[in-house]
Length: 281
Image (cartoon, rainbow, N blue to C red; front, top):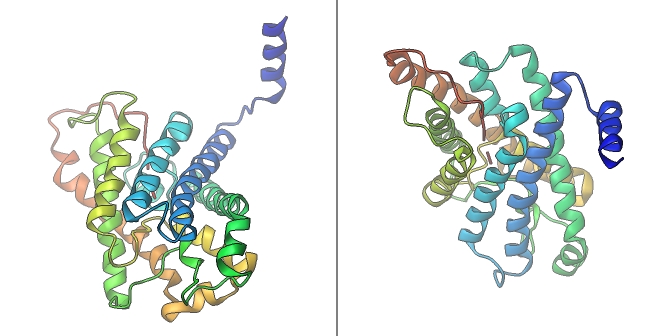
């Protein structure tokens, strides 16, 4: 009887249309990424570094990405990043008409993930800030959700940072899922992809905290604008907000082209690509 009930539920509730399945997978995967990643930042900041440190944040985002890939990888490829989706379009691994659906799902998932972190730690936020949510100052909390540049960073330096960081992310992902390369064993790809974020975090995090993902940065930034931080989240640091949006998209395209020209083009024969087309922060 239980089996019959489950069969009926599946028949009536399961989504038949492929793009809707992929939309929901990308939404949930990005939600998981932001919940673990921004949650790690929140715990570190709101505890005044008593329950966290930079390595805690790196682990949160690395494991968050790994789990996001496990959640969504088998359905949508687990991109959870518009820069990765764009790279897959460039390489013919994702149909271009699906791209807007993926990006919308990723943006909404990141927004929802930020809302969940704020709800989870609402009392801690109020205690830490005395109810005054700000982007700058000693009790600033805007950086929990979105990236802001270090004082030394110029606009050009920030843009280059995001192109290089995201380029390395996409380049390594393409190597992991390339059937003609060494790759990773089936089912272990998300672990390998999570380790990319760990490597980037410990080597390229100084300038602006390695956002590398337009949805992961812009979605939570918009949430903070609506939740009480105000439009300062967009105007701070000379209107920095567009750099973690544009830079990663350029980096993803550059990495896709470079990997194709330097590696994939020279495979002796075509190998089937792995089904997991995953990622980032």
